[in-house]
Length: 159
Image 1 (spheres, rainbow, N blue to C red):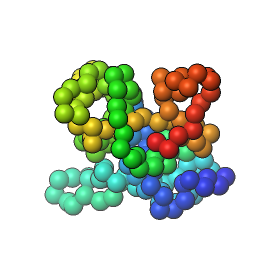
Image 2 (image 1 turned 30 degrees about the horizontal axis):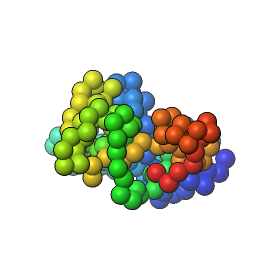
Image 3 (image 1 turned 60 degrees about the vertical axis):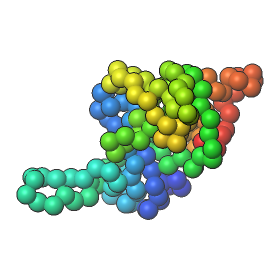
């Protein structure tokens, strides 16, 4: 099955199958469709390497990833303002972590709570991006933001 967003060389984000890392997204690049699975791709993780032992240099980490765990990299955001309770991502330790703004601090800084690790940390606005879902080949804002226009419909956005 052809997936126009997942051609060889396309930048993607990969969800983690590990429960404690739920809500994290790893950046990657599509290498090719999987030769063995019709709804999967060979994907190279761009921030993770495969290393069998410390005495050898690391090598690219290429894995077979089902299409349900892939999404295109979201479009670059223009200047974005954030508010209390916004769902955001921040890039830490080689992956995007999903969190919620719990407090607006001074100087365009925000306290972000991460449910998966039960911790919160401060971030500059420049370190955040608004969380969006990839649904039916469209970028969709989270529920709170969708409701603001009052029509109850999912709003397509350039996240």
